[in-house]
Image (cartoon, rainbow, N blue to C red; front, side, top):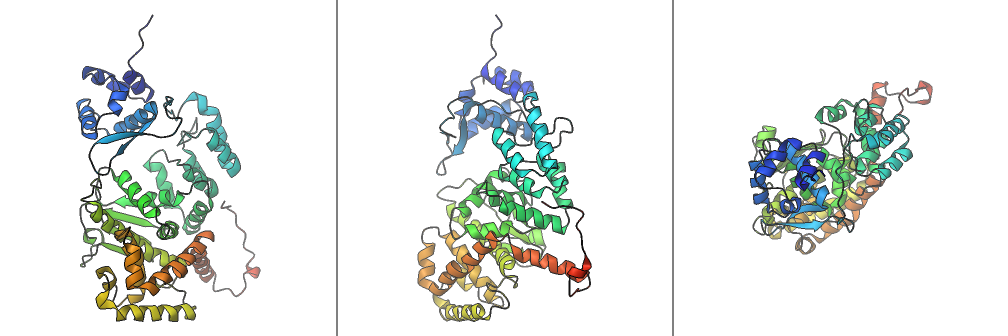
Length: 449
């Protein structure tokens, strides 16, 4: 009878990493559970010895295979460098199979998935996603095209949003570049559909992550952003800011993890920790220090960077909601404008007694700058922030909670109609400022789902 291979060899073969079997056996790393229980530095030494460090995609595949094999997820204790393991679910004690995106066993349902995408049949797509929840790319058996790419190519944006909410992904960067070639109306519709899909309450987090990028290579970049956005999202007063910002059709968030300022990214002369261009929907963040694992010693610095992020995203969100150059009211709303002016004057009268972050708001852009300091303070002081604002600027804090947040929530429910209005106005202008659209007899040849 043929002797069964060690667990590590079985795992490597199923993950398509059979070329490493000999190296793992040579150093005695043949026990999968033992590998899972190693501290991160010890795990890194093993990876170095088997020469997998130089191939990050292989390492990523190996980590995923290791997690699925044992049913655990590696997590880090925020106050130490020691790794611990936690169960991913109550059923995780049973060994989970390695997911093969090209398995012959799933060819049938993958073919049906692509047919449903071609028909823009969102309900059928949802059923297939529920039937095979472990598949992420849904590669077509013949063309090897991912479901995400197929949906974009077919203008099936409702289906695309549904796939995104189930954590599906493109096969590679070449595929994901298809998003860059969408025209204005297609991008607007794609963003609108992303916000209509309610299967995942975290779709805005995935949207923000997908539109974030790094000025330079940064180790653990995906995990850093995931932790950052989830921390901000945990606050009821910050979550609407993130959701509205994620709806910006051309959003780009660029981080510089090596510097505290944005100068190298923007070429500006001023030393800004963060900078936003609302018209271009571009955000720049100096994020030095975020690559370090948060500990008691670094939490405050992490909060400072997170405060800058929500500060800048709030600028963008206000621009989307009110279309008034970042001011927290609409141009035609004289009542709210006068009320906010009164609040601003009240805050100016207390300037000497305000927190430094609030003091820095006063200058040539008082109206735009003061209101975004509210989420900034809440993020910088997760426990004391409420008390600081309630004591120093109670009217401004109440205005933010009752007026601004309510308007943002309404915008989220309506799918950010302000941007649609802007786009429609732009195209009406190109049509010659027509006074009546009925006489134009416009027909759409391409259906946008």
